[in-house]
Image (tube, rainbow, N blue to C red; front, top):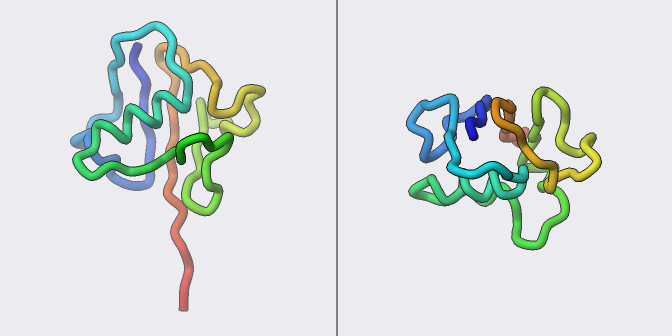
Length: 95
């Protein structure tokens, strides 16, 4: 299964690749984000253990340009071959 990735930061572990290939036929958004975390030498915690949603202060995530929260199953939404997952880190303002 090939998943395309868009981001506003360099995703650790991807070495500037825009796709990730998985040797499976079923993959949820949660599993995808957990796998991305494992690929990085310094793990990024996209999904906190046991969380039902992503921390909205840290991340915006979309599947095919639709916010993941708009999908009936949220983080448990099954991804399909060729889907695009967009991950945005939210910049904190300060002053």
